Amino acid sequence: MDKRLEELRKEYKNIPIPENLDDVVQQALGKHTKRKNPVRRYKGIAGLIAAAAIFAFSVNVSPTFAKSLSDIPVVGSIVKVITFTEFNITEKDYDAKIKVPNVSNLEDKQLESSLNKKYLAENKALFNDFTKEMEKLKKAGGGHLAVDSSYEVKTDDERILSIARYVLTTQASSATTIKYDTIDKKEHVLLTLPILFRSNDYINIISKNIKDQMTEQMKKDPNKIYWISGVPGNEDLSPDELFNKISANQNFYINKEHKLVISFDEYEVAPGYMGAVEFVIPTKVIAKDLVGDDYIR
Image (tube, rainbow, N blue to C red; front, side, top):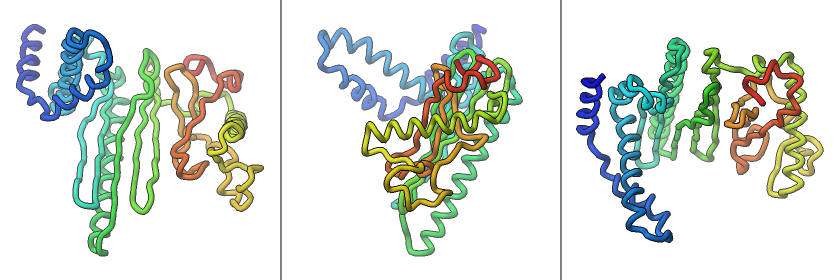
């Protein structure tokens, strides 16, 4: 282990420091300028921020460095999801920034590999679609096209790992879609809504609660609009455009408080200016229909 640590230390020291590191540190420090004793405080803060910035840069730039961290006790347990690779295009009127997440340290290596292959395939397809559309626009005389894809770890505790993958596409207008994966790290299972409930009754129970939340939000804030029946202005919408109930495999994740969160893409249940929306479902509403309290409490 000592020899391996020495190798990692050498590799770490040889990683180039990003040119904008000073800017990152100064920007972070700027948030604390009103505090007392700035000199004493900033010396410690600057060191921590610089170390964190270099660590994050090292993990994303050096796959070898990132992989080798999992071999070190304590440090290995910190690294759960990192950027495996990026697909980028920056041209006038065309911009693609696609980050591919990579899950590490799952005990079930088959599940880990399956997730990572899926993430890579999805983002390759997204990048290929972007380049095809870009070439079509260029041949047609030009246009504007952008795609921004990234991810966020919503929950990571002893039992649950929930990952959100975002895609923002901008052309004549913009649209955001979000996909979630929620993993039971103990049982090595990719969770779905049907797995969580005893029967399909959850579809109507959750749907009613969401509509109740929508109605309550619109009462409190006139700027919020949801496409549900009985709301002034929605009379012209067709039944297909109105939200009636969630699908059996509706987009969802389990948050840090182990509450069920139902998510909708932009334009799915509300006008575009509302963006992607989500609803935390009170556990008391669904408790008797859950298969247990291992996941949702």
